[in-house]
Length: 154
Image: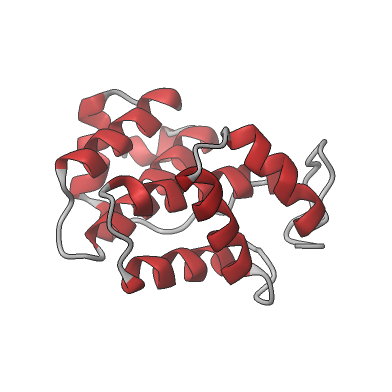
C-alpha cells in the first residue's frame, strides 16, 4: 500500500538504487565499498541508510523507471559506472551491464559503449562529474538545459 502513495521522485530514486544494486551483484556479491556507495547515493537523494538497505534487499523485485530528461539519464549512467569502479575491479559482466543499462535509459545503441568508457576514464582520472558531463554533452548532442526529450537525440 505504501507504494501507492510514494512520490514519483521517490520511485525514481529507489529504481536508481535498485539498478545500482543489480550492478553491484553482477560479480556475485555487494562488498562494503559498494554498499557505502549505494548509501551515499541514497542519502544524496533523500533516503536514509536503512531505506537504501531495504531497497537493496529487494532489488530483484523492482522495475526500471526511466528519468524524464537527458541530464538525469546521464547522472544515472554516471552513478552506474562509478559503482562499477567502486571495488577497484572492472569485471566484463559489470561493463556489459552498464552498457546494457545505458541503452535501456535511452542512449543510442551506437554510442553506449563509448559513453560508458568515457565516463570510466574520467572517473578513473579523478575528473569532477560536471566536467565529464559537460565533455559528454557535445558527444551525446544534448543541450545543457537538458529539457525532456524522451530519448530523442540520444
